[in-house]
Length: 218
Image (tube, rainbow, N blue to C red; front, side, top):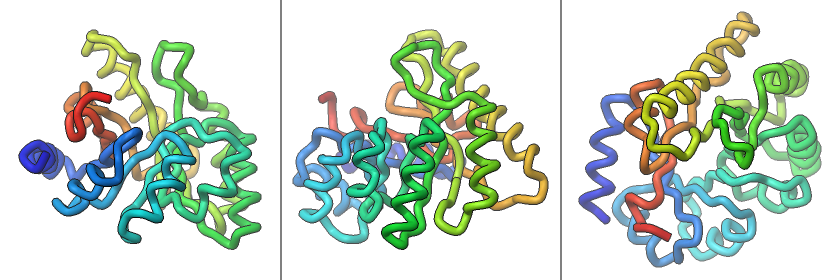
């Protein structure tokens, strides 16, 4: 694990990108091994897993919720999540804002964009993201929209994957240009996983989500 973790860190360093170690389904003992190497950011898909693992691991771990988030789980996960990657609807954004106000929290989030061709992938289109950001500019005291997240199509076609990652970067640039008075948002592009993170880095990723390379296949 140490050799692979260090090799990935060395690859990310020239790009200034952050590694999110995707620990879903993995026991706390394996997470602790990676923590002891120096890894602090971990990604989980399910709210219940975060709630189960967080109390048994060090407090300085930054938990990233990368899976689809149901609105009825928002209240329980906000006090624990460092960043929510999967804000994929206006309804979910409204619920997060509501619960952030109720709990007196500041919430860091990424808007999940639809860039893949697969119907199973969640995500916003450009107009939906624009609507959320327009609302956020009036309600930003509780929300930090740090950037965008996207998942490419599961395919061996590297050209298609590259095109989809480039699409996400283009979406980010279009959204930023629509708000010329703001320079403090959408700086994060969360894209790239074990099989395609090198392409994602070349296309501007600032945050990669890697699980199987670190922990082995699930």
